[in-house]
Image (cartoon, rainbow, N blue to C red):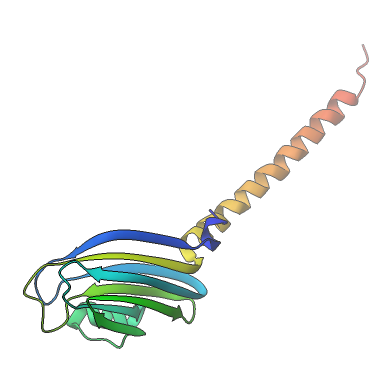
Length: 156
């Protein structure tokens, strides 16, 4: 788990944004230290789609009232993005309708890569590392104790 926290991850899929002004599709990205998210997207109908990257606090505003200041924003039918995530935290990659075009479902093909130390696997790996090392030390001590015990001659 610890090693996987350092590996870049990537996804390629097709998402559907249902019609309606408050509908969107979001990916949560948790990072320790700085990171980066990059990728490409294409709307199957060649209509514009909005792509945002929000910090956690700004995403809260976006999810609540549809407003927030993104770290990154692009609006196009086909495009790419490459965004630096400046510090540890939770970020959101959001695909949404442009404000004037929310009356129809949008199908978006996308692929993206996330680089940085992923916090969940890192923490889980670190937590599991401590008991693993403890068990290793206890196992070695038990083996050493058994060897010493076997080496002691018994008197009859």
